[in-house]
Image (cartoon, rainbow, N blue to C red):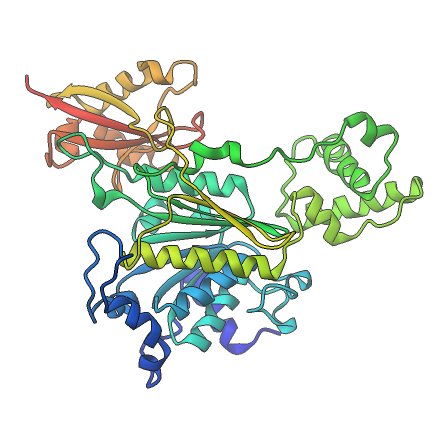
Length: 454
């Protein structure tokens, strides 16, 4: 049975997307943030560019600076706690998972009575209850939120265990970038992200300032390749529990469910794999197949260590504070931590990939004020950067305004095809940035339009 307070929060998270826990400062607020206030109200030799010490910085963090924490697992729990104790009072958290009993050894915001409940909802409730901040929760997949949702935040902090999810959010943040009339990035459109990750006794922290520092796509080579097993070993001579699990996952599933793609987040799919892996392990006299191991193998999860989560989350939260206030110069731009043999940390300044399609300049085209949206879309489809990608009728948006959309919204946006782009974008500047998306594209692509004189 759900705790009444958490049940109320779950209703908010599923319906309105939030569970306000109250953000009013209590009587012990001044004492609670005394150390943070000293940092924000005094100048120093290590402050960042543009820092102005003031007693108004902390109230800004408490009431105005919106931070999104993505993930409410081991790293996400630590991030929420640290950010709340640093003075951030407008926090939101998004996570699609529910609490499993195996989470309790390191995800300290959860209790045995919380098993089966949404991580985001329970984490938001606990932090709001203990730290007196407003935490809104979103119990859903990150893809279920549109661009307007992510655009509202000042900073996004990532506590994820998925390369794919990081790539998706990186593309979303970079898609907000726009160029000013001089062809430089408009700093008002930059959406900073702080990414943390842990793997056993190792971890990393990176700051991603789209258009300024390398984005996630620029440095995907940093991630080691996932473990692969020869199919002949899986099919003929399995020697470990992981072999039995991968046999059920990679060989049996496609044979028995040819029309259904395996979903690592679907409990029924994982349970089916567990059952079949146990059967195969019994046939070959192999012991050690457990449900938690099945989850780890199919999701490629490496057991997390609570102390590593705490160290990496502390570094991430500090970088969020630096970005929000400039009270200290920010990290440039990647820090690795290794704690398996002593403690070792090293910071590296990686460089942007000038050809990156995610954080780079994108496609640039010159058009006249008379060009219609239909004509511009035809120019895009024929552009050399999209040749061979199969793009035929992309969806087009300008900021939060959908100019043309495929799918259910197509009839509503079809009249825009015959309208001038100059009129659709509000005649705001001689240079505008559009975003295009298509099922053939892995990520949204930025298009910079320059209106040329007739």
